[in-house]
Amino acid sequence: MATTDDAGAAAAPRRRSRPEFRNGRPTLTRERIARAALEILGEAGPAELTMRAVGARLGVSPRALYNYVADRRDLLKEIVAVCQGDRPRPQLDTAHWQESLRAYCRALRAWYRAHPGMLALARAEDLTPFASTEMSRPDDALVGFFLDLGLSPANAYRAWTITVLQVSGFTEVWDAWHDRPPAGADPAAWTGVPPDPAADAQLPHLRRLAAASAAEPPDELFETVLTMLVAGVEAMM
Image (cartoon, rainbow, N blue to C red; front, top):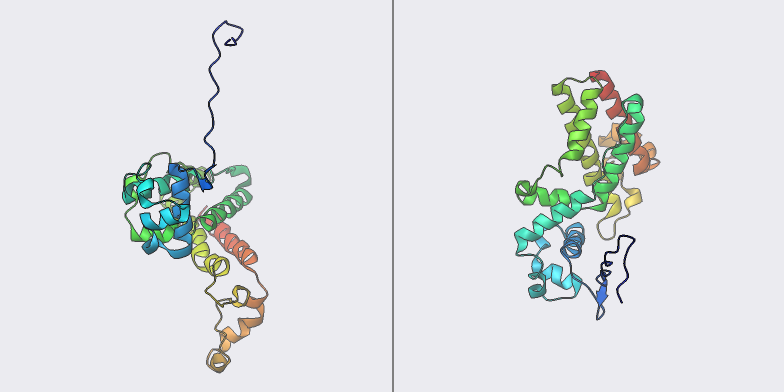
């Protein structure tokens, strides 16, 4: 017998959720396929992103993927959607603008680090057809924040682009080396200062930095980047 609510209408049957695994393999969805592709991107780069590689990552044949994504281009569309869905939404407060800008940049850095390979994919493939109004909302909010601080449209544009460049550039170069170092490399020993003792006499100024650079981990260096970014925005105000 069907149960009813207070209004007397028959209650809708409960929807059964799809199990995450079936026969020891992950149940396929568009999102799960896209996240497997993101793992490949982070480990091997865009050149290795193939339907065969994604199928192997999920333990299925490439043919099984085509029940969910039409082709590689459709896969790229879903990758962009999943990646942008993870992007932090700015929580910016003009009354406490310095700290709220710092907090957003920290969240943005974490997002870039969680999706390694996406910047390389954007350089290798034309992803502009997959852009949407919803995907641009975080950028629109950041630009609005700079405008509300009193920056001119030209300076708001500069502040927005420099913010993105500073954060993405740091994660692409500094964080990438520490998060995914080459085989046999010690990420803690990499500071950007040439380690070759034979070059010391020819690089006297860099030699003076050796001790200081070795003592500063990436998180501390990133905070210095934010200090310089905030100072630059303040100068434009």
